[in-house]
Length: 121
Image (cartoon, rainbow, N blue to C red; front, side, top):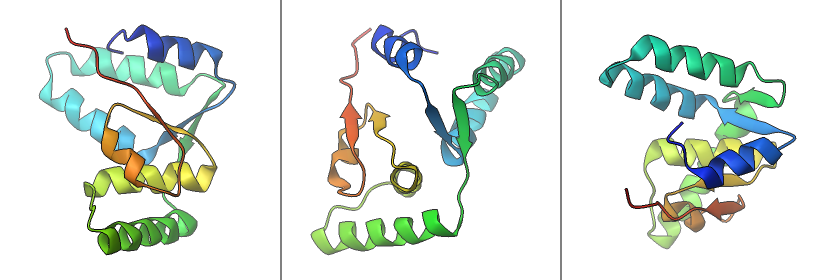
C-alpha cells in the first residue's frame, strides 16, 4: 500500500499470496494509529478478497515451527522480535518465500527470504 513498485510487481505476478494472521494484526494496529482507519480497512478487505490471497492462521504446526525457530535463534544468539518469528514460522509452514524489508529475517534458516531494500523517500 506504500506504492513500492517492486512489491506491486511481485504481487501482480504472484499466483498465490499468503497473508499471516500476525501480519494482519500488525496492520490493524497500524490502522488504529493512523488517520483513515475505515479506508485502510476497506483496502485491506479488498486485498484479502482477491482469489490469489490466502489468510494463513497460526495452528499447531506453525506453533511447532515457531518453537524450533526460537530455539535455533537463541542457540546462535540471534533472537528476533516475537511477531517476526511468528511470521517466519507461518511462511515456513506454508512453504512460502517471505518477502520483507527487515534483513534480520535472513537469520531464519527454515524459510526462504526475498529481502527488499527500503527505498528512501
